[in-house]
Amino acid sequence: MEHLTISANGAEFHVVRAGTGKPLLLLHGWPEFWLTWEPVISRLSDRFMLVAPDLRGFGDSDKPDGPFGPDGPCGRHAGRDGRARHRPIRRGRP
Image (cartoon, rainbow, N blue to C red; front, side, top):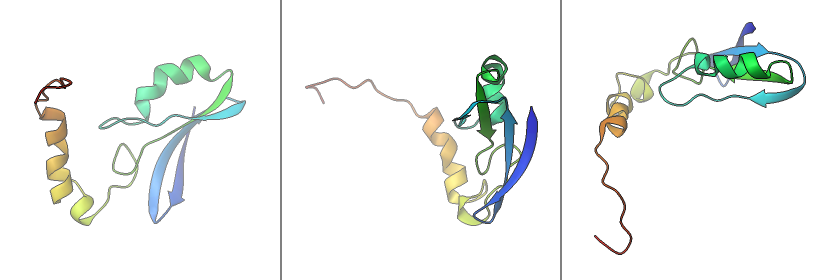
């Protein structure tokens, strides 16, 4: 497993690369980071070149500044989506 830092769009991104073969990009969900994919990496690295980046704002990648950072309005409200109570969708009923 190889840990890399890649510069793109004015930010530094942490990327893990492992294996050989056709490339397979592994993107984590919110609020995870590359380590989410470790069990998959260990099983597929003999068949694929796996690339698992830490998306911007997560893990060891750069965190955005301004309103899109953790202290801005977007960051403060992001957790609400995960805590919201969702009602089941019923067809034909309000």
